[in-house]
Image 1: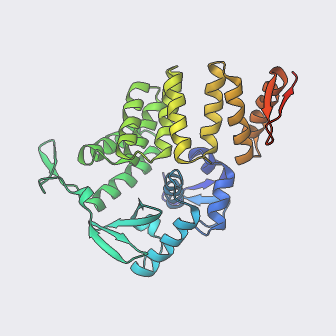
Image 2: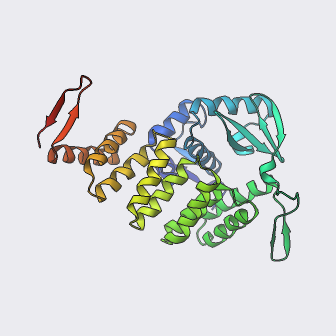
Length: 305
């Protein structure tokens, strides 16, 4: 793929599985320039924002941390030039083996990247590999690029696998590799990688969402529902998790439980074909069930089907 390749707005929403309201929110916050076409680097930046937003951190906190990192480091775009890491309610940034909190201007050695014995941790084909984070970051970006080049997917898988051999807790690499396996319908391998991601980062809502999807594909509905619920416990406004959880409840014949999540989805993402489908499903449930509604004053009303 050419370095000047562009992605239209619709492609970005599809590739990253983003609701348009989320992209609009990032644009309004100044985290990405509003555009109808995006470069590959902007796609990478949006992918990072998606992963960050799948945690409890707010758009406002991301903006504040990025601004602070620009002031402290002189970087033009910290989301591309370093690696953002959730630290409580704000971001720190990994670079050159250090972890920088730009709000407090504190810097610490990044022990997460260092094996317990201080030595290299992996040998591959007789070659010793060391956990240098800048190298891992470049490897990760290379794998992302390879995914989009026809005929290079196996090479991308190899790069992701190498990253995970060096740093098993690299949740983003585990997620991306799992998604490749998922698209290849190798659901066993996909599940393994998604579970690796949730073990590495138990507050990574996207990982629980993807785990739910692969469990759903395997018809393991109780486990899928639990995974979607974990994603929503972390991020209650996760629209796509509400949508898929509603589908899962319908598949196990629990329409009343599905109704709550259909209505939540339409509130969070009120436009587009998925919202229309969610509203249609909610109407069907309301039309076919006798649902009891308890009012604020304790009186019970019934809606006849």
